[in-house]
Length: 473
Ligand code: BGC
Image (cartoon, rainbow, N blue to C red; front, side, top):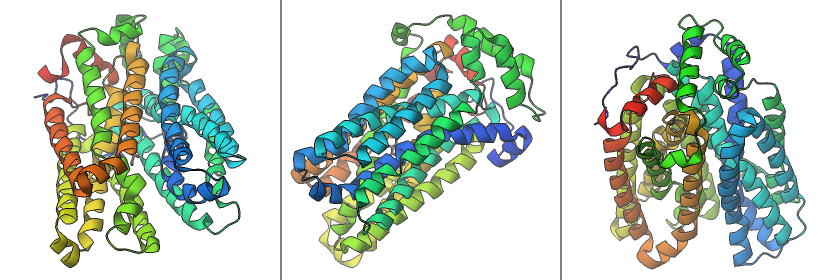
């Protein structure tokens, strides 16, 4: 079992306390701007189901075209994640994010002004390129500017932005449903946060770690001094030395290093988190919550309203995660969350399986969905993106994050593409039971393999990894 390591910071400050000690507005500002990447990602996840209802009539899109409109974004995201793994090292984390904001604006406006389904499919792909990039360069950037004591909470601003994006999209779908050109507004409005991201990223510094790896030591020190201004615990010399040492040790690591015995166990942790995050079925809840609820006999309109509850619960419990990740630790939240969502899946299975429950306990469907999303939001949701930003050494960090991210989008695509077919083939309760089984396996794998990274610097984590595999501390 990965126990608390020798470098563990036992002070267990709360996020709010830690932020107060870190006492500097710059850190919050740069993290919030970087997290807009998450907003774009979430908005797209949430907006399309509502928009599709209108697109299909307006652009005469058949089933195949509708599926393409939805899923081409996920393919674009996979490609974007591959390309930006390289770009984040070459042109910096910061410029990659500026680029992603610009591409996003182009994609969103292209979608809004599409004159036919083909054009819309093409621009959804462009949008995907940006979403795939933003999805992991945001946590990467924040993890490299944050001090260890609040890193969990700050990096999870990104997940908070993802969940807020989903909720905003639900609300926009609801507000614009009766407006002329409704779907064009729904898709086009996303250009605004895209522009804010692109312009905002021009105002933030490069990460000290990227500067060191680019040979710009003085700028790295300068940036660290600004980021840590007002933080009494900060030791700039030590931090810079650690970053340089880690950078020296890694040298010019190549992508094939990912397969070296030293990195492989970590890559497996990243991939397991990536794939399980999707295979427990979270996006079936996000994409199909209204369908699931409508099947319980609710009218369309009240199932849409209840879907908003799902969105709100997702945001609220992500806030809980932000507040707790640096105090309680990643592992506890992850394992508790996965246990909780397994129970929720069992409840949903029982509900859809038993007609008695459906008659006498109709609230169980919404209850199961809410428990599910709360448990996801408090653990696996943020912890996947956080961990992949923490566990990899600097030399392979962006490459390894990009591989994990591609796996996550690929798994997302697979689940989205199979949920309705699976429900048809093995019934809805059968599908939830399958997800519950996968969640049990996920729990066991995480319990055995995922290290605790709370309170340690990225370099300490890296040094430990260099000696050992994560499962044997
Ligand atoms: C996942 C997304 C999911 C979202 C839900 C993210 O961490 O990667 O696939 O839609 O959480 O809140």
